[in-house]
Image 1 (tube, helix red, strand yellow):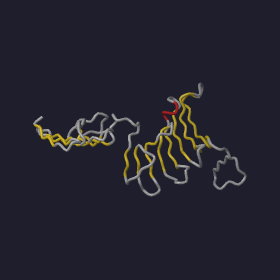
Image 2 (cartoon, one colour):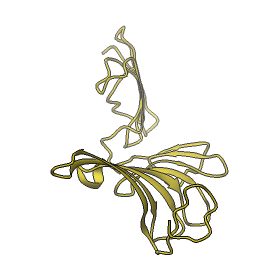
Image 3 (tube, helix red, strand yellow):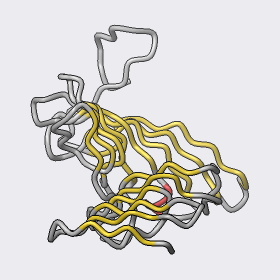
Image 4 (cartoon, one colour):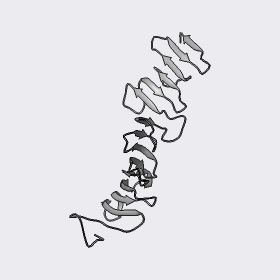
Length: 178
């Protein structure tokens, strides 16, 4: 479609500078043309970015996920929401970024909403949205907690038997009984 020299059984071609190149669409109610689900092949205007977008019409762009390659010459792989915020980036050199488009270590974790209240990393005893016991946490403010979900110092260690250890920025070590 769009070419006189196809290179495969289905070949879509467009010379546009961006937008939807191809779409697979399913509509739940064909009489009102509503509640559709889409799979789009998208070329973004910012460069030769190739993205596959999964979208549900019920909630606008916020219900979309897209995955593909950066068009900045790096060909990094990324997964984004419909607004373009990066959830996962994998560089061609192997670094993986969660919440960042520019990972600088083997694993880089950034705050997806740039908030100090959202934890960067959590290890808990449950996979539920609200953990039953938090074993380890790194907060958006950079505090690290072991045995506590709300560390009050750069390193806050708490045990269930009532003995805790906290180290603050002044180098003060405090061992408490609570």
